[in-house]
Every structure is written in structure tokens, then in C-alpha cells.
Image (cartoon, rainbow, N blue to C red; front, side, top):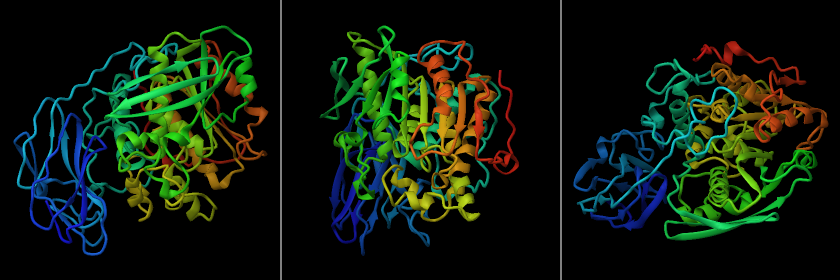
Length: 527
């Protein structure tokens, strides 16, 4: 690699993690790293300013040469605008060149440009009968990601993304074919996850470290070690007032705004998760801050919401591996309101061990659909859209900026109705406020109705509901929604399969979902 000014910063990233960073010289030179990491390899230019530019010749991976100019995915090339080029060895803007995946057992070798290698990488996975075959009575899923072994196609480059004016078809696979059976949902979900991670939220890294800690009736103390770094955090516990151990858990991201006394009276422990410790949300300049980034580096692609999701997953790891406590690690729910509601849906979408997800008034970046929110604004409504939210907090990955800042959310290959659908086949109850226009009241309801089409197609429509009630302050849970929460808690946290969660799709906002505009695709009857 070489630079123009001699103070360009370049990093080698694998699987979304920064492996090594260099300040490169003005003459072509080799830069070598040895790592056990696996995943997509990217060479990233991170401090564009003035005359700074970077030229990348190729990478050599254990003797295999991959030329930069042969790679279609270059987000730092210039062709009239940043991110406007491909098949180029030049990085004119902050961005990166994707060189495909690396992994397996290998050793390092240097090259005349940029070199990386993977010394010894291994991963393990387990299967559970409660994964893709979970279509009768609900059975908790025992592993974080049932689709970890799915073969997911490349997510491509921004320049090659087509415009999709409607909500993208959740049943249309990345190869262009349509789903024809329920057994395909595991890998279709993996595709949807990969696109959300690449373009909107950032990567939730596979975890290969260790978790330890202690669990009491007052707190859950979690210690995590990975990449030679260690962090710890504590989640406080409020014990149930009825029932008997082991107790199911409702995790509140930053706290729960549901009726917590009602939860505890049903025999559910309420856990307050310290999300701000894992990923800061104190303004857009807090990107890359928090304990998650202490492990994976401040340049990791993860948003703060993904950092929170990773932290909750490590808490669940501890509960699973340590049985000397009073909690049921197979019956876990997650909730959160407003900004923490964004976190709740991301947490629930990206860890399948969570049986019940209840996002509350989460708005843009949560339940709301990007396309519908833009349409609301165009119609004169005062609603938070992508272009505004990216300047508020790092709830989305920096990769999302290129859509938000150019008004091109219609080029997103996914939208947030599919983020909601990722919770299937588990329980999902969306709690919304019809009086909150800024949070995209029509958009959140439309996205929820669209997501229910996936549940309907899978034959499990009773596992998802949406309830939108106004006439109350933001995050003030109204008693009129208590019976719906009770039913979902009964079914998914207390194991009462006779609890009635059917046909919960209501709004008092008189919103007419324009199905012809937003859902022109067909909902299959999958078997």
C-alpha cells in the first residue's frame, strides 16, 4: 500500500473487527498481520482529509493473491461522489475495499502491498429441535443463532443496490427465488440478518471468548474475555413476588417501562441491563465508545444497539453455563422504551435464545420502516427519518450514513419490517403510541402489519401482535395494553400455551395500511 501525504491511517478488518492499523508511507510497501480471525476481510481508509488518498495493490492470504482492482466492493472509491466507484485500487474517501472471506487454518506471508492471514480459526455450533421446526406449541430455542452454518451470498456494494420503493419482499431470497417451505426460514433469516448488519446496524461478531461471573437474587455480574481484553458489567435484579424458582426473566434495556409490578406478580424477575456501559449513546461523537468497543476496537462497525445486543448475549451465556441460580435461562424476554426500545428489538432479533421481545415506542431505528417514515415526511408529517437520526446518536452503523445523507433509503435491500420478522418463530409484541407522530406512528404500525405477514406465512400468526394506543405520555405504559402483555408473558415466559395471543393487530390512530403501495408481494402459505 502507499499514501499521498504519508499520514494516512489504514486498518485491516476481519469479520467487522479491526485486526491491525498502520500509518502508511508514500512509497509502496508491505504491511503484514497474522490473526486467527475469520470472516469478511476489508482494508479500510479511516482519516480522509485534504490530499490524503490510499492505493492498495493486493492482499496475499497464505500465498493466495487477491487484487484490489478485481474487487467489486469499494466504498472509498470516487466516481463523482464518495462510495461511487468499484473495481479500483484507490481509496479516495473514508471507506474500505472488501476482499471476500478468510478463515480456517493458515499462516501469514508478506506481499508487496498489503498482507493478512488467519493462523488457526475454528468455530463450533449446536443444533436444537426448537429451531426451524418450531411450528407447533412454542419451544424455547437453545442457541444464539440457528443460522450460523447457512451459506449467505455477498451483500454486494452500495452502487449496485437497486431502488425498491415498496417494503422489500421478505420471502424473496437473495438469489432471486421465493421461499417455498417453512424449513427455508432459518437461512432466509440469516440472509436478512446479514443485510441488516452490513447496511444498517453493523456486525454482531461471533463470540469465541470466555464468560464468567456470579448470579444472585440481587444482581448478575458478568465478566467477558476475548481478543486479549476483558470487561465486566453488572445487571440489577428485582425478584418476583409470586411463583417458584427457576423464574423467567424480563430484561429491560436501560430498565423496563412496562408494569413491572404486574410482571413480578406473575412470577417474572425483572433485570435492568446497563446498556450505556456497553455502547454509548451520548451524541453522535460517542460512536465507538463503551465496553464492547474496548474489546473489538473503536473502529468496529457495530452500532451502540448491536453493542447492547452483544452484551445481553453474554449475560445469557452466563445464565446458561451456571445453573447455580434461581432463574430459567430458557425463558427470557427483553423490553425497552424509546431509544432503549430500539435496542430491545435489535437484541431480540439477533439472539434466538430470547423467547419474547416487547419493543415499546421505539420509533425510527426501531420498529418504524425507513421508507414509510420518509413518505410520512413527504406528506407533511413531523416524523424522525433516517436523515435526522444519523446525526443524533450512533444507534446505526456508520455504513447507514450513505443512505440517510443522500436520501436513498429506497436502495436498502431490507427494511425494519424484516428486522421484526427476524424474531420469528419466537414471541413478539410491538407496543406503540398512536399519538407520537415524531416516532412514526403510521410507519411503526405499517412495519408491524408487514412483519405479521411473515408470521402468518409460517403458520404462527398468534406469536406476533401489535398494539398501538394513544392518549398518554411517551413511555407511560397504559393499562389498556396490560391484558395483551399478560397474554404474551403467559405463553412465552410462563409456558402457558393456552394463553390467547391471537389477532392482536390494533391501532386507535385510524391508520389505513396501504398494502398495495407497501406490500405488493404475495404472502405464501408455507408448509
